[in-house]
Length: 100
Image: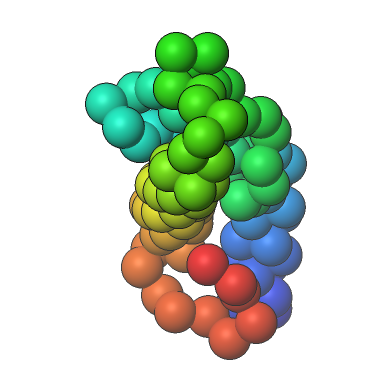
């Protein structure tokens, strides 16, 4: 019975953490900060900022690469955040069905 109570408490803490992660924003950048991507802890893209100086109609490919790199950087940070926070809740247990 105690095990079921502990499992329910962990489940409640995981649900609370998932809601909290939606509010926590990680910033990724590329090109020395000329392109920034913002991703929440659930790995949803929240925004992109581009320094107007980097916009060159003759070289769209570089801008595309910078945006992709900034998003990748932000996603990695968000994944690390989620993993760290989830490990605090689960005590480092790798529980089946948890996607982090």
